Length: 162
Image 1 (spheres, one colour):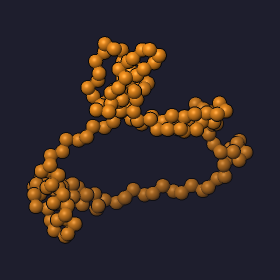
Image 2: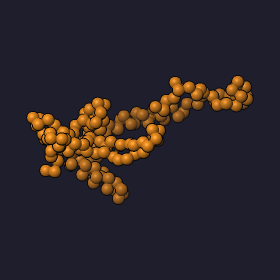
Image 3: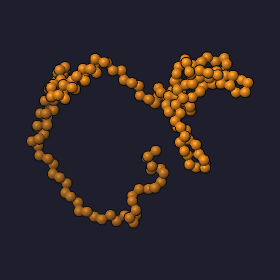
Image 4: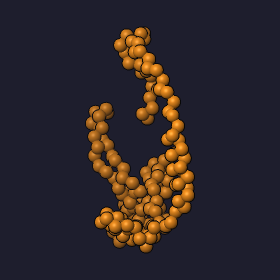
């Protein structure tokens, strides 16, 4: 199948399988211990087993390379929604009708009293006078002690970007 083989090290032979990872992992290399250079995107791994262990019957490895990625597909990625094909076709047909200037064929009748009551309420409130606006305050220059520096601190405690 192109995904199983034998891993040989010295005189020992171990069964091995190529498995897909649940997400792409980036690998980096450094030449001077300070700057990192991206070298590859890793999408597969080789799983080497003991001779007595059974080969995995799946193509994708369920867990990533590190403990935080355990059950990564289940915990981190959204599941595909269950869509009814009839509903999708009906909505598509209705959208095409609306875009061509027509109307929706299967429109459910809504309780119009809810909307009429809200409209009557808005009509009643339109006759009332609006409260007077607050008097504008004259602008006073700021006499802060920062001497032209921006407000806020440079401490790490207030950094919300992480």
